[in-house]
Amino acid sequence: MEFKGQTVLVTGATGGIGSACAELFASLGADLILFGRDSKKLKALEKSITVLQSKAKAKGTVQSAAFD
Image (tube, rainbow, N blue to C red; front, side, top):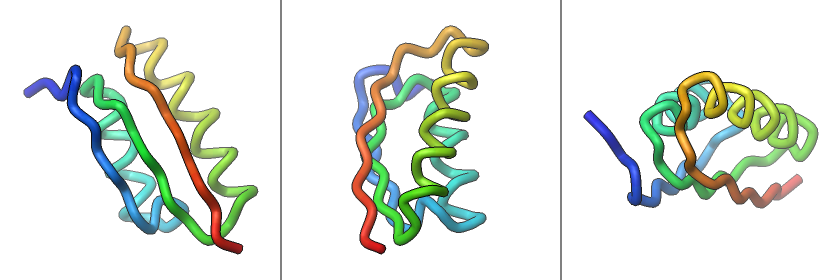
């Protein structure tokens, strides 16, 4: 399955299930919009997704907003 060209909105991205979903969709090439309550965790997730995308040769984008 591929999500290249698709945009996925992940709420609760700083939690366990939300971050796992974000990483999965990123590895499948999706453009991501991430929402979470912890800005530090959100920045760390963005960094890990960038690394994951480069390893998977996925070219999605990541945008985020924190509500802490």
